[in-house]
Length: 99
Image 1 (cartoon, rainbow, N blue to C red):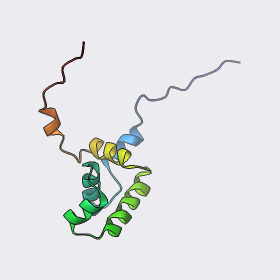
Image 2: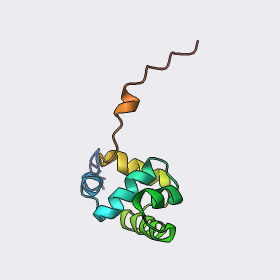
Image 3: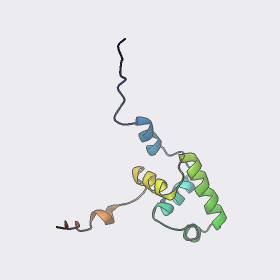
């Protein structure tokens, strides 16, 4: 009996599609950007003039819709989706190698 190996793609195109077409509302995207910038729920609520519980509910909805469980994953998705402007980091001087 001969075994046949299936070739698996190097890139999960479904993942790419999910990243470029986030299934979240405009308000949830706003909250995701603030969350990815490291802001607390309280800080987000102050900036967007929402109650802390509303921000918490939006974050819970974002996590459910994106099938994630923490802020680090949310930040990664925001970066891959192009929601964050990373240009300040690109202008930093390179870190010298330690010998």
